[in-house]
Length: 396
Image (tube, rainbow, N blue to C red; front, top):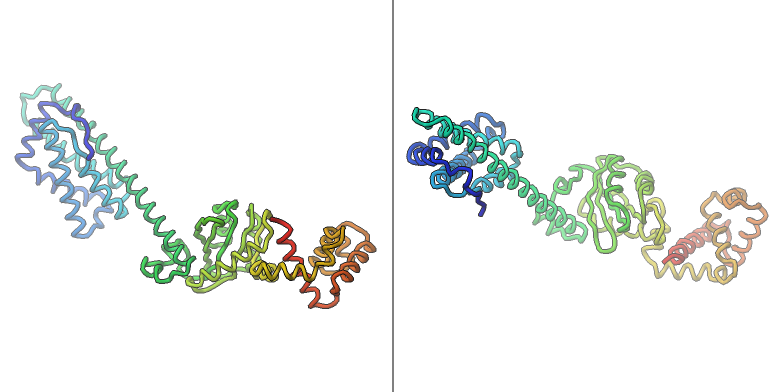
């Protein structure tokens, strides 16, 4: 229970006037205060009949409590004030409106006290001055109580909204569709577009989720994020689909770790499957690298990452003779350059800053060691898959 010390208003004049008001027209004061609030404050004008009745009841409760405290010299209790503030804040009232409302209520009460006191010509001017000064003491007390209750309510509402948001996210991530329905899940509750398409993002914990969110927002997308034990995941929405390559490029620009992106999908209930694809895209990048990848932009790498045991076997079976060479790291560099370029000797030479004859010699050795030809698409695919798997094994 909250109470404020009574030292400011142990004033004989205030005490006598408060007692007279309690014995007379306290209910009339509550009616006047309510009418003034409904007339002066737009948000109060919009209240329905039941809400107006609740406001009137709270005003009467607060007013009687204040007059009783003043009449008895007791500490002023702010519990009724804070109870009403919490209720109105939860209904969307602003702090300014609530402070305005309580100033109206105090104005009505103090006008009545001063009016009653002024009718007595025997009251000295200094007593009247003390009575008026006590008005500001009570205004300060109530303003503090209103502000504190409002801020506490906003914090509580934010915590509730955050818990609700995380619960909805978890239901999608874990494919618990029944929980989503029970919680009344909507795209709006997650802050996503009501209509459009979705994609999932899986990022290392080292990545700044807010930076990723801003990068997506610059593409006209909205996203909501959930940190987990080993990564952080996001669901993003857009009114219209943009090229996944553009999404990968935007996220690569701000990534500080590995980021995986799923393909677009139309139904929010397909989030769990999309998230698995985003996770595979993320793990297709070696640990310690910085950048983004997607199934659409690196299908072989993602497939290898999704089946690491198979990938390791492919790397061993295709590259074993090459990996046994003392200069195998150099050979892998030439192999990567050959696969990452258009394939001509000149392109590889330009990439590695070496002579074309050197390139021809290294590529010939790779073909002989692996038994694969760069002229056969199936062999090139096998070499690419094996190299992708080896890249994942090369870094912890």
